[in-house]
Image 1 (cartoon, rainbow, N blue to C red):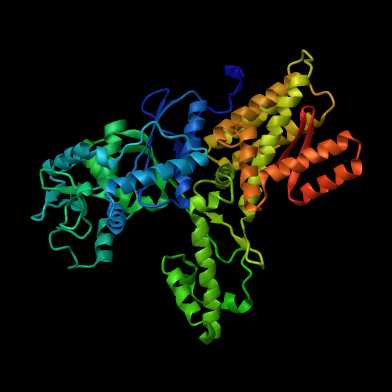
Image 2 (image 1 turned 180 degrees about the vertical axis):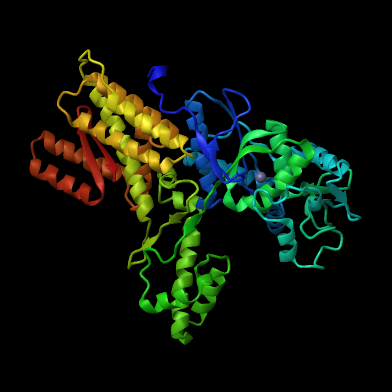
Length: 552
Ligand SMILES: [Zn+2]
């Protein structure tokens, strides 16, 4: 692929939450981009919704890099937090060991989803000096104050722009909080902690010395300190889930801009949620639906669903009709919560397929997590299973293209206009506020064209080359079907035969038996063995070097 070929992308635009407008992606330095995305609090396995920002921003980084930009991408780990301390206390573990364990788990989960690690992955535990420095600066400038207990709070009333991101006026917030409810040591209820003094029961791994006594940082200050340490007073794009707009990002702005002056970020990008719709694909009776529709709160998935379900089941024979309906609703919510854990879902759906499914919806739109239950209790994932079939089709097509290219003849003519147009449309969609959903349309047309060429008797090598280059471009930026096809099929096959309780060596033996039968021209036996394998969901591929198989 020569450099002049891919000219689809020129000027990416993004939706900026601060101005609520789609603007040219800001940058301070030509040829460079700086991006900060809020990362996870590492106290447990992540759910599918947590995977959306890393996938979305991974595609953004790949897209910018394909244009020749040098991207500095930072995503933090919140490895100091009340929830981590709670898990540590419960298990008698060191809080840092808890955090370390779930950082490794997070990295494994995201690697399975094709996310490349950001260049910079700062942690709170290693940023304490930087955090103390910004807190000192805010105190010196009159934006923060120290209480008798050794806590430090940000004085929200000192920052005139407070509320500019979330569009919440301070007066309104005061009214919401109510009068006279201020914490005893806080000046205003809206003031938030920059530094929390250590409590006696908190373990050693969760406290650090500071000018205000032993303690640990509040949540919001870490991102101001880490982004400053790695990206400077101001950087190009700040990203995260829309739930972080308030208070987290509002507070980051108040801290960073009060401490350093310039706007913290040139643009703020917020992704929408992945939602669980328990009604979709549910086999609820009209009676159950009536109960569900009567109370909107019932749709929300919560930690109390399981205890409520168990309580109902404990009284199994004495349930009213309404309680029987509730039992079904809670059972379904518990199912959703179980499968929403990314690690669990990955046991059923390949990570690349989960990624493709996420990219099928624009990052700012809500995305519905889908789950169906068969009458015999089997859980299926219609949309995700479809996404997995699509990824298989992409890999299959790449293999076919490579095989076809090996024998294709050059015509000497220049070909590749169709491929170039599709790449242009793909890049243009991504330039348009990272419209991955729109970009999949040219991708699908490109793969359709690739299959046409592979099925043609004598396709020209020039066009095959152009299509393969375009396929390589789009799969690299999407981060889907970009890896080794055989490794993908081996992984998916291993998972499927395991799930069906099949034994690899038994399948190998049947394949050999069929090959032997064919060799001695016992075609009846060969067909019989083949039918047996097909019934097990095994697809045979006869090639010049023998027969291979896959689970489908
Ligand atoms: Zn943050």
